Image (cartoon, rainbow, N blue to C red; front, side, top):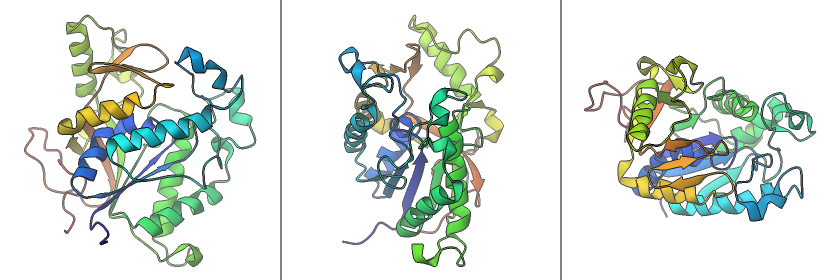
Length: 299
């Protein structure tokens, strides 16, 4: 079987992060024959459990949530059509660190405390095996400051650099240069449209009470966004993948809620900021954004 000529790799912190941020993108590229690889850094052991009958799985009880979430991730990947999904260093190598400045940060296996060089080496092995032209991860604050998201950013960016260096760990495979690196991005205009759409339906957005969208931690100025991937034709697959993570979110029609029980809109169009590589030609939209993560790349 011939390997796909276009290959996309995504680096995420916990199961469900991939679906919320990139589910429609992943489903679209799978449908287009792109090789899609997901690398997840922890099992999400510290997540809050939204299903009452599974409450005993939580970290402060039986502490079995991580193993359960492997099954949730498998179901989500099946919904999106992704067959290549892995855990950094193997399942359970790194533990969910919990929110910043919580006791979970200090657990011995917490990803936040991981030896960065070791974690980068695990990621380099995947990059050199998969040989993606495009890699997607978080920005330097992990979107909203979660320690595992920040660490995933550090590992992903470190791996991009190290994988391209022929002198770095030749035992991990032949050097490979990722052509384009993107960070997930949520334009402020999109956040505002979501607030307005939910208000029109009588739903409360978690951000409606903020007087200034600058206060939304993961929202960025439209000017720094470079790319919009239209995955609306695959929104049903994204919704199915979100429903596959029931311990972490509830889905109601076009909206979903995390443990804060505040609704957010399920988005079929997903946005990115190009931080490495050459920007491709603009798509047809008025913003001048790319409409393809592979824009400008050969083949």
